[in-house]
Length: 395
Image 1 (spheres, rainbow, N blue to C red):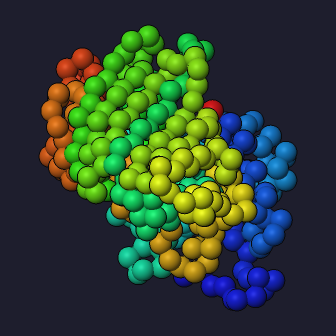
Image 2: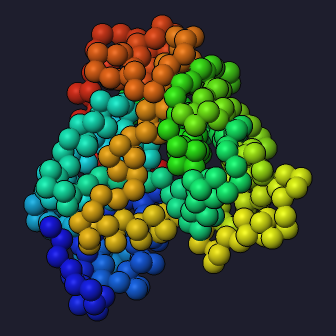
């Protein structure tokens, strides 16, 4: 277990390694680690990438002492407390398992991995003693002051029961975006915008509304020459009775990320693109609600934006305390399960219920479920062997 003391100045430094040195590492992981290192004992001890030039340049720019091109060697020599994964999804399972078995906690970029089977293998490699190591998924949109405040309002039913919700991730991606080899394929990315883009807002919706019960869906390949979908829509019923529409698209020139929840006594709405602040939330009270109540609902407190930094700060606290972090285990799995269920509902035309996708179900081992017109063609198309390669940069 990671040993610490109550005095921050005497705490043992957390040793961190970054795996993958592409755009996600440079633009999100490294800045979050650097910002937090300014106020607590934290040291980035190594970086890993299969591209020697990339990892060397990354380490020089960031002042990291040890560049590696081999993950196992880095784990053996540096013994990090925390490994952050900024690599394509197809590598997450093997890299997460390797880090956990080496005793390191893991902070893994979304999408978590290409299948529920992979996620369950990752979770099975976590520590069995109750104090870790654990693997958390990067779902930064549920962190920050705005999401926390609204989650508390909904949990306490301050605005009444949630009734109707809308979850929208309508973005735009051109052909140059899909020229990156690992994008738009089931084997490397796991899915299309449902998996790679909309999962953030879907995760936030689940975090706000709680468990879902059933889903119906449609998916299409309307513009892009990809193996996955480029648009999906769904109807979701939650255990609390609320019903929601979900739209995921990479075909939408007017880009927006939006969640709206209509409760008995108010509507709460979040409109943003890649991250939100308090000002991005709006609460509209129903007639009859007093101004005092409405003002209390609209008091979000000090502004803490949703960000990698906000999530990582909590993860480091959990690591030092030896407790399971948010977005790990079942809490991290729930969004991937909803994605898998959306694909199954879309490709089969049926209703999918929570918990029905397990071992033996074709959608457990691959999100395309071997569905005609969607599954990769050819012998061995579902084999994982081709994905068991060293980590690549997430760009």
